[in-house]
Image (cartoon, rainbow, N blue to C red):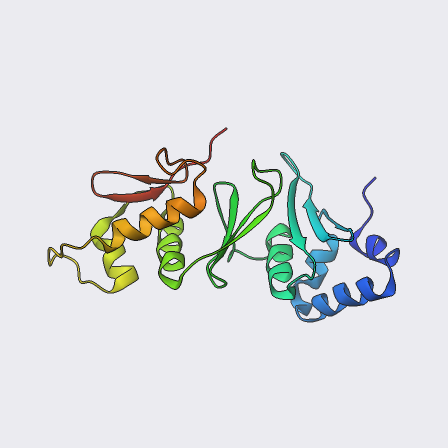
Length: 193
């Protein structure tokens, strides 16, 4: 039987218990949901692991030590169903506010933190908002760069940023499985089986 959140932290050393209590104190409205969520926390000498159990396969997120409290809080809220700011894109969790992608543990390459530029994060955010629908090229240019629609602007800015995102996200950028393209725009492809 899985121990409750409170039972888990009671067996930890005082410094680790104090850290988690301090994290929870920053989000008092959601702390109850986090304590009741089917999430386990495991510490090792090298990392902290959050594992969420529920319908379907378990989901695990790994944080190398030292742990960034902000990233930990956001992930805990998502795992407890208390936040919608993190978006799942392929094998990644995407945090638009922090301009980063974290490859979820269990994915082919293990846990990985990928920093994005401001424009890459904005572009991925627009694509994620509309997933799995195609976002028209003119809409992306308008929403991310402020280029007004219908003016027939000829630029390779969008294509360059898509190329760079694919280099960061895709296992094989020449055969995209995460960011797809159509005749009129781009989309986040549905996750595979």
